[in-house]
Amino acid sequence: MPNTFSASRVQELIHSSADVKQQLAQQCASDILTCGELLAQTASQRRLIMLCGNGGSAADSQHIAAELVVRLRGNVNRRAIAAMALTVDPSVMTAGGNDFGFEEVFKRQVEAFGTNGDALIAISTSGTSKNVVRAVEYANTLGMTTIGLLGGSGGTLKGMCTSSVVVPSEITARIQECHILIGHIWCEMIEESLFPELF
View 1 (cartoon, rainbow, N blue to C red):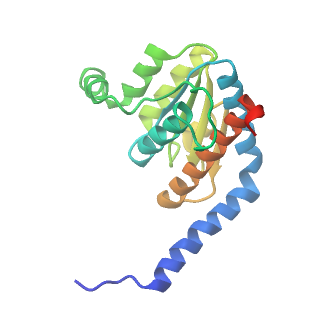
View 2 (view 1 turned 90 degrees about the vertical axis):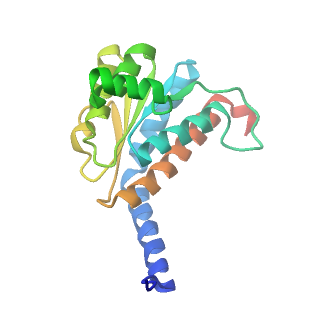
């Protein structure tokens, strides 16, 4: 099978990713800041930050939660920050999917663990993932802060969340690349807000 990729194609994809990040910087910096401030407020009150998403967004949920619970930067020794990815327990996910349907698997966990003052980061490249929408709907009834990490038009979730960042791209891979960048920015904001003496 011939290799259809070339160095110029690789460069093209890197430039494409960089172009979306430039648009993100120009169009979304204020939204990123607003969401980060809300998450820092949640963390400062020692409340729980939950995250959910499907596929690559599930992996991003776990990635961001790990940065908060452990640490983002190796030279910053601070206390753990309460964060939980709702994607990591296969027993809960499969039981919930079997008993209530896949659309309920995140909502059920928000019901179990969420309370007023907590936050939910809802990650969806389309903004329309039904199980994420259900989780946000329920989190809103609890008085939780809901943060959308979205793409494209923002979909259903854009209008449901307390605040959102919508990556200006329709390409899933480019959106996901920006999502983890935004997640890292939020982690830096939270760390520096909670532990200013370390910076």
